[in-house]
Image 1 (tube, rainbow, N blue to C red):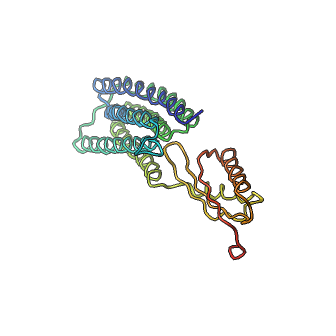
Image 2 (cartoon, rainbow, N blue to C red):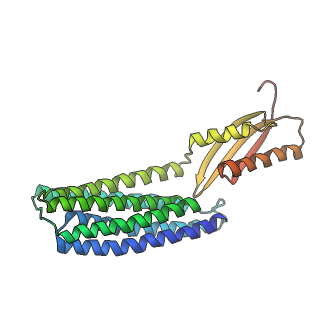
Image 3 (cartoon, rainbow, N blue to C red):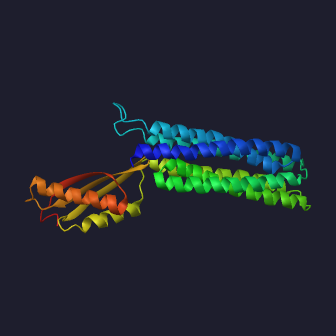
Length: 292
């Protein structure tokens, strides 16, 4: 299956997230209004912004499927990463807003005991989001989509947030009135933490960062080839859902072009079978005694 088909399948996960978030945000905001729960309101606002973030992911996946053109010779796969970055900014904004609004209510002593209906709403929402998380997490691994993986992380954080909201409301019902706004504030902190994780992963990708341990594993695999005298350099970068590897190796200078080409074919086979990397540029240089 090619990367374009993978991205197309990944869109299903984005659509499931969008539908779930629209439904849950409407229910939570309505129940929070009639049931007087700051925590559930914060959770509903979180889901509202998740709708925007999921749409951004969907747009990123669609743009990523566009074929290479005169300007984008490597394709448009990084649009997916930019979508993840955009989602992170939205999540951070709403997280800070939730923390500020909840703190202001506590400071002004505007705390009201929430209705039990808000607790059951939060628990039901958590169950729905855990299902969506499992689906998107498995799909992201299958299609190797960074933005869908970011969406799955967001799904999990939303499920945990709703569980925390449920606990906070139950506590408020038991007479500890400050637990509901506290749960609302924790919602904001979790949103910010998730946003930071997505932002960090996206910026590493956009600045051509790559897992150093994986590069070392690749270098060890190539070094095992009997005709590779030395692995001079291994570099890697991520382009959307693809890893691009550049390798410089030293070989016997007496080898002809055909023999050298067979070495590169073997290395490409190692990379594909052992490291699931299908895009590699292998540069061959002659080995000399001084280098050894």
